[in-house]
Image (cartoon, rainbow, N blue to C red; front, side, top):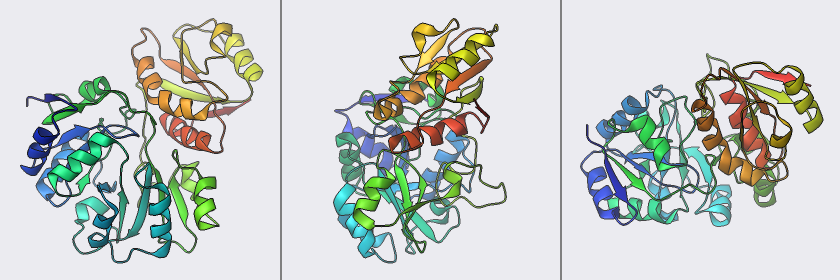
Length: 337
């Protein structure tokens, strides 16, 4: 299959491909998404095939205006309206009870659906021009680091999808926060740039599911993308070192070996004796989120490296989103220093 590389000016062409049942990688403010018409089951199936995505991993439906949510769910609750007014368009996904129009292939057989309205100008234009909601999981091979640049998408999916819309680098860098309003207490299943503290400022009490920082049982059915399976992983083995800067540097420099690299903060790099990739500054979790997936992919470009020691980020605010991605990339391999 030939994959067309479209520019940000080619919104109409991208929309036509989607209307005809094709699949197109589109930019969002979080990561690039692999889009298909949310009402075309054959098109959606192409996403699962191209990505190698497990069939029980639910998809997020993307809309271009708040009004579009009403036909997709059984009830737009008062809590949902508060969240939409506060954070849409933006990197927040809301889970509600689905209406009959939502295909089982989207919800993974669950009675719920995840919906978000992206803030990216090109994404909104494409959805609006297609005249239908779009499903759009991350535009990468399943299990690999999510794509924040066109070259990431092309590396994983060129020749497997119809087109890629090139609109530069995604500015947030990690996927949207996912909150379910179907629990007794609103529950975050995937942290993102919209933090639990921000959600609590609108809703009051908010919980986060234990699967945010722990491995989900293999027999459990994931209510949100990014819960059950190994995600975001480079090809090399990744181990997280949980400690302060001195502990991290001492561990690495005392265990220096061939074929070992570091994934660290910019401040750490000057003190390392081994190859490294940086993912932002220790005091800037937003920058960490923006740089993480690109740094993970850079590790794969390093020659003769088979083990990476990663510096652990903070576990609060946006740092929780970075930690959530990193522990999955590492397969929950953590050494507490």
